[in-house]
Length: 130
Image (cartoon, rainbow, N blue to C red; front, side, top):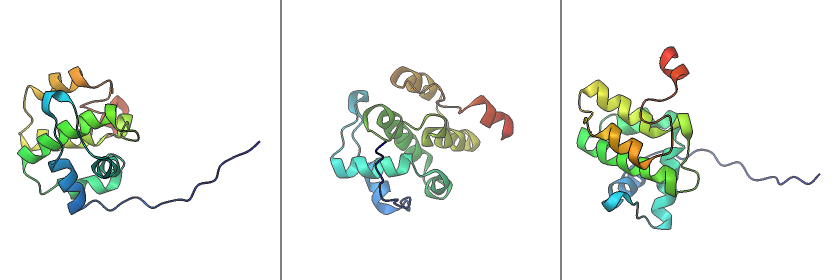
């Protein structure tokens, strides 16, 4: 049996270039338009996990809502962004709800453009543990 062995790459540290990629994303008409470099940065955010809380914490709610939209659309269009119950959209929605800034129309929009059944609340098991 042949197996491919790839090089392990450490996860990216989320920073300014990731914020620029999210800020520069065009989501008009619920379609995500990004160049290859921006797609790579968005993919790194989607896979950031432990980095999210520090990366998202001090951003304005308006900016986080825009990023949530980008990351929701990215799940369906950018390979490697479909992270299921480990989606950054869940973290963003939780943070916005904690701030009291989660727009009522956001959940129906997420459900209309995403096939990720865990959005925007996460898995039941994670919510019971949290």
